Length: 361
Ligand SMILES: Nc1ncnc2c1ncn2[C@@H]1O[C@H](COP(=O)(O)OP(=O)(O)O)[C@@H](O)[C@H]1O
Ligand SMILES: [Mg+2]
Image (cartoon, rainbow, N blue to C red):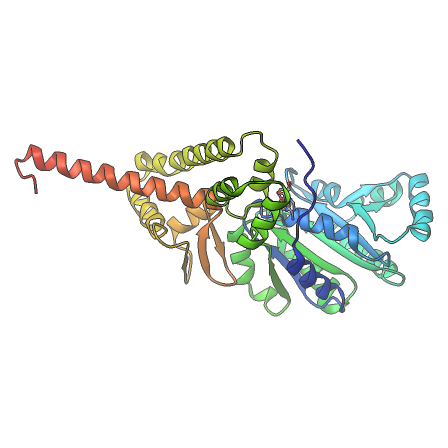
């Protein structure tokens, strides 16, 4: 697959650069639907930061974390003593870019010491680490897929310990910028309502591309007029899908195939409820039918059936604007298709019943 160059994101980059240009006071939660380009944006941005910045990127995705030592392993990365010195040497010689690390680099002896400690000591250790760094650099901590640890309990919920630490790094000490990225809108919804974080965090939405940005992308990749229409119809501004189309031999075929697959998945999720829980099935269809004509609806709180659809990544809840919408254009089309088929099968059922009872009305 051809590597597609990074596209646009001017507004989001300006917003994040503005955040980085002042003292870190708040934790920044970065949210948006799945595959909207959050990770890609931060990867791109980290490469552009001036060299007085030092970026630590930690990704919880796909990591199995059940205890303290798993958590430590994700957080830190051991650099051999020699490498570490080399890294320090390159710090003074790096050109324009900021230094970037995956995981927080520590030496083997530091890591051994960290393992023996309790979590309070680890946070204290990190506080010292960032304090030292902040004398010469601007530390930026990026934690991706934070929701992975949302339910992990070691004494108490880990996520709260981590939030406390983030508050310490930002609001209290103003040492380090903290960006917490997630696609999990139920998690963000919880964060948003949490008293502990109230007034201590802000939200940045990294959404699918707008129509204008999408059209520029398609133009750049040589889509003709018809292909552009098809791409927008099926994929909307979802970067991942657009990249897949751009890389595909038959763009129309690819779009239709992707739609068919997504439709099948959604039907499977929704219709498997019919057997298990009829009431829930009806309620879920009720929520979906709101999207028959509208792209989004407002909400006050998330009911069980809505939570189900959000959990299954069919709907995306934007807790800041209190809006509910499909995770992508493909999902929206698949929802509409499922609803119209459900309606026509109900209609047929009614007619059949009517015929059976001799009443065709
Ligand atoms: N600005 C962009 N320009 C080009 N491709 C992008 C862009 N943003 C995302 N993509 C493509 O979409 C894919 C999914 O993006 P990603 O950042 O992993 O989504 P998220 O982290 O929001 O789930 C990327 O691997 C990349 O191929
Ligand atoms: Mg991501």
